[in-house]
Image (tube, rainbow, N blue to C red):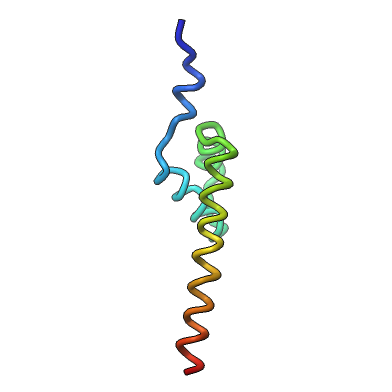
Length: 69
């Protein structure tokens, strides 16, 4: 017996990154958002969101540092 629900949950990191990026921007289609919620796990979304937030903050720090020099 195979469990099909675990196979459906395995999606690539790029799918999770795309979903998180669109969510950061706040422009998500309701149908696509629901489809992503069905495919992605909480862990995937949380890890990609933390990495995205860290990269965003670091880019702002670098930009401010560059502008103020």
